[in-house]
Amino acid sequence: GAVVSQHPSRVICKSGTSVKIECRSLDFQATTMFWYRQFPKKSLMLMATSNEGSKATYEQGVEKDKFLINHASLTLSTLTVTSAHPEDSSFYICSASVGGGGVGYTFGSGTRLTVV
Amino acid sequence: KNQVEQSPQSLIILEGKNCTLQCNYTVSPFSNLRWYKQDTGRGPVSLTIMTFSENTKSNGRYTATLDADTKQSSLHITASQLSDSASYICVVSPLGQFYFGTGTSLTVIP
Image (tube, rainbow over all chains, first blue to last red; front, side):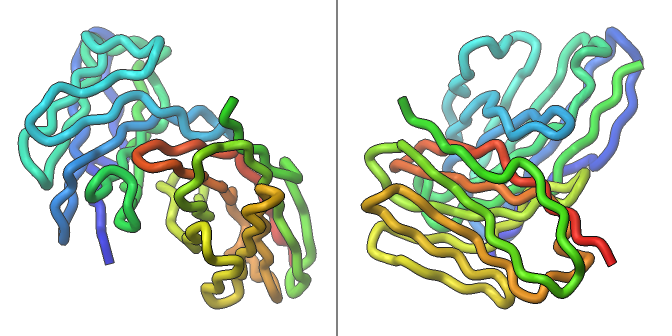
């Protein structure tokens, strides 16, 4: 089945630094990848949708200059949290699909970001 | 407005018992409905996916039902195990979009 690998699973960084999170589709080509943020005991909040080779589409209220998304290939998307602040601490999850919403819609295992 | 509502918000059951989680939605048009299990600190894992024409789908001890007329779905867990403790999320999808329910937190106690 479709497997999405997300790395790292946990990261701690200092305020003001940048952190990159990778999302890879291991056994399929992901035309579309999604990035979510999840607060404790809350549902996933879609941050942005990225299509391979084009700019990401950000949800309202998500700062595109702070959360940089790159989807340079059909198997890799990255989320970079720039100039991280403690309020950016959260659980970030990616997912990937083939053809924008088909059966092959799979989540990564998530990244716990802690900014100190 | 496209919405997905799940109930109950949380549930505690004894190991070995059955339970049913509910998902009501107003999303239109409808393409498919998925149930996911999310363990704490992990990404969601797919349990079932149903299209408009399917009204039941099983995956081991998990059985999902769908009534597209009333826009309701349920997830039935049989003979619960301690490892079933998790959040269960209902996701309804028109083509290319995803609407998430707020989830049901299930705790199975010995």
